[in-house]
Image (cartoon, rainbow, N blue to C red; front, side, top):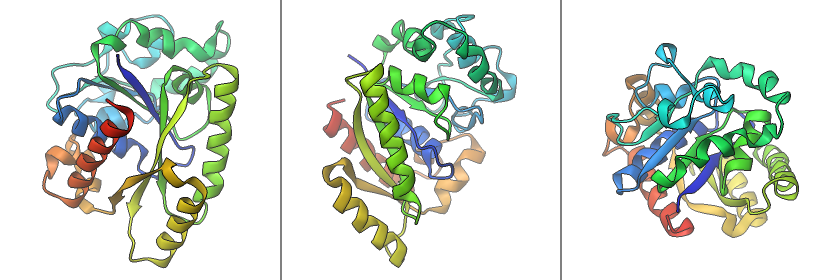
Length: 255
């Protein structure tokens, strides 16, 4: 049975999409059947997987609106070794388009129902905001993975996100769980990182993943080549960290 995991943080620039792409690649490298759903209008997860978001005949928006099926929209046989349900700027219309629909928060749940059994893991890259797309992702998911940069406002934003997760649990998805909090762009040499790290440990304990993703230039370069860092620079520190993350997620969620 597949596990559906939403990667979300309403704050941009925390390594959410980078983590979605590289976790997908790392899990695929460990012989898991992986689908990556690009629910961010920026379409960066699609681009980082080698898909030209400007040349799509169909996107995840068409699937959400019932104008195409997930099966006919998913892009397969990619060099990255995982499948992608691609997204692009058309998703900016989703907020308005979905509002008038019955059970608008469950459109993604319905869309994935017919294909999720073909995969061991479905990863959803959410937009950097708590909008209708994010609500759809959280409604469809079994758990939430929260990428978090160790910076001054990290805890404040995390509290708001956890409140949203709790609301989703109470209203539409009672089984939704926190898969973990992932520290990204991690540099233990700085006093700020060490201070925020201590706060995270004090507040969240076992919710905090053991794996940390370091600042690494190869991780930043990889998307411009349409590849995860695990393929672009497989022996880099960033690549090694994402492979360790995949193993930790497999253990934690029995993937």
